[in-house]
Amino acid sequence: MISTSGEKLKHSAKNDSSIILELQNVKKHFSIKAGFLQKTVGHIKAVDGINLKVKKGETIGIVGESGCGKSTAGRTIIRLYKPTEGKILFKGRDISRLSESELRKSVRKDIQMIFQDPFASLNPRKTLRSIIREPLNTHNMYSGKKRDERVEELLEKVGLNASYINRYPHEFSGGQRQRIGIARALALNPELIIADEPVSSLDVSIQAQIINLMEDLQEEFSLTYLFISHDLSVVRHISDRVGVMYLGKMMELADKHKLYSDPLHPYTQALLSAVPVLRKKGVAKRERIILKGELPNPASPPKGCVFHTRCPAATDLCRQLVPDFKEIKRNHFVACHLYE
Image (cartoon, rainbow, N blue to C red; front, side, top):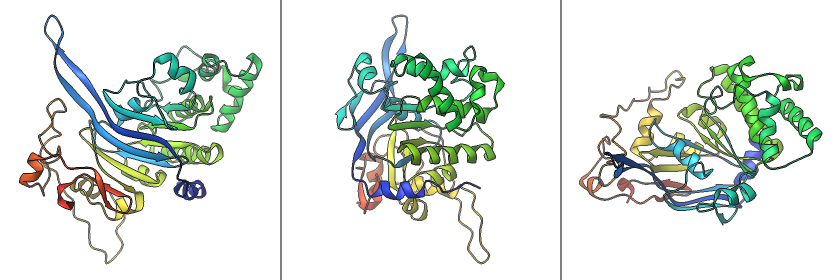
């Protein structure tokens, strides 16, 4: 059973008006090249104009089906990808156009990432000592002996024995490897952690342990999370607010209780209808909404609302005009012509 040890922090985060991260019309387009001269013949619009504000200490969940651009958005925020357009404001400073050396000096320590695959994200040729010490070495934090002490401390924080410091990643299970990845992300005392599908490759029981660990660490170190996942149940538990993405765009953003109890966008309604729930006696069965067709090609997205080709409520306006992403109810944002 997943615990709720982070609820106190989550409640206080909602009352904190400080914005640690803001996205202003952020886009990431990848060039499509063809021919002998590798000329650009088009672009894949992986992220196509996202606006988002993240408060310090809260957890924002980003959900959507495969190919919607949620992982690309996370990698663009941390500047593994350079944004094509828009601004990424971290603590009020635009980091979207900083050089790699400027990022290393002023940003890298404060924003870290937990990757999806705990097997591919750790160098199999390095020991835990080397893996977790690497960011400390890069940023010249602590002296030689204190770095090892820091590594041992981090291993203990994530639930691993400090005596494992000289072992290699192949000696650990998937859940233990993800704990190592979390320890590495914590090494530089970051303020913002982008977790890209951090539990999707783990068994359900291990998922619960990792989620509990992340909540405990959030409370202890006052962390802010951007939690990317396709698992709506996990996102509902850990998040304060949830954003729903489709084909590079944000379709809906709201407090998790509002989003799950009263989804406004037809795409969100379809996603939530697929989540299995325990039905109480006498309560009507929830109707499953089946979306027709496949996810459109991001290199050639539909005109107007990108969801109109699969939307059961689409109108002529949806086929012609891109809807604005705006506040329909208090703190409930939707990009849909149905509410205009």
